[in-house]
Length: 229
Image: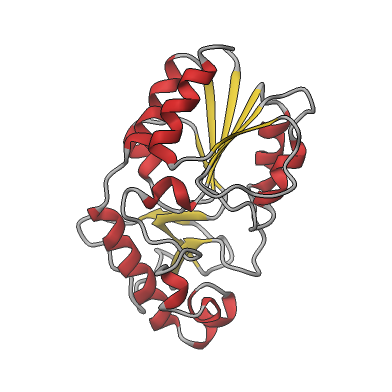
């Protein structure tokens, strides 16, 4: 099977009703990034940060995978698919995708603020995390999210996956957030790239085929194009 590596961003989950930061009406208009998505914000007001992610968790529990998520999962019958996602939701997994690498963490997980940084699943029946909720070693739990200003631990693994891709697909990302945006430069020059997004980005490599549609409709067109390879 050919190795198909897919990079997904906020546009992948927008059709599922997941609020984005960058779009009009998105989360950036309601919260300052510095307050809820940085180590400094956590240090100043952990209650606000925990409440913000509690709200996002509840939103996610009410959301469902869209047709684009299911189409990617279905493609596993024909390709060796590895998804690299900037999204912190679990919609790829819920749609049936078996190999998903989360660059920016996972909303349905928390981790210890202690030295070991152990990661734990959130109880979907009791999804809120509050001050005083500690790991077994007695350290406060925090969202398992890579905040602005923090290192992206999985980026090197993502780079290797992209370097070994036979086909590279980008869905629903502005390619403005680094280091994820830089993954495009790890694609070999003879590897076809497909970009699914209603907004076309400038200065794209020559091997990029643009599918100017949302995730679900774009995936339908991608499947047709892949059948011709």
